[in-house]
Structures are given as C-alpha cells and as structure tokens.
Image: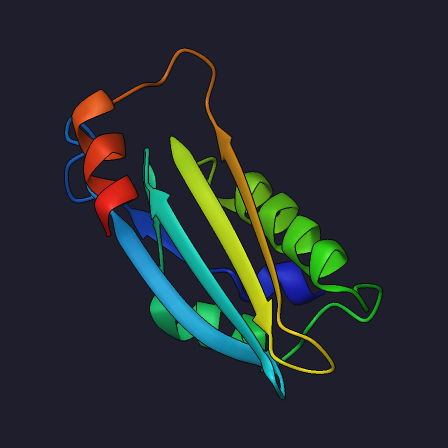
Length: 117
C-alpha cells in the first residue's frame, strides 16, 4: 500500500512548532509541495521519496492528487497543520492548494510568516 511508505519518527521536541517543507514530482510535469507543522511524529524524507514514486492511481486531477496526499498525511502523521500544493503547467497552468489543521491549534506568528514566504 502506497501509504505504508510514509515512514515516521518521533518529533525531536513536540513542545515547539516548526515548519517542514518537502517537494517532489510524483508524476512527470506535476510538482507537489507539502508544508507541515508536526505534532508527535515527523515524516522521514526517504519514505516520502518512496511514497512519491507510487503516485495514487485514482488521482488523475491535481485536486484529487492533493486530496489523496492530504488524507495520507493526516492518517499517518496527524500534523498540527498541513498544506499540500499540486502544480502543473500543461495543458494550462493549474495550481491547487489545500490546508488542514488540528482543532484548536493556532500559531498566528508562524502563520503570518508563512504568508510572506
């Protein structure tokens, strides 16, 4: 199962919010960026690379791919906050951004910095 490739490790310090960003190309011509604030688990980058090598077969559109990745990350990591961005240039420029967060989690200072990035 594709989701099994999303291997994790304990967070080095779950008391603090920190941002993790990973990028890859799961399908030729399709760029995927994830940004997340981990909670108790962090994502292993090697596992994420293996995960990208097996893109969801049931996700033909950028929207479906973004939702599939979001669901997988939420199931395996339960991050405090996560954003998934899928971009394609052909046949037309197409960008999908989806975000999710744990109930009652907020870090206004971190979110304000993200808007400037």
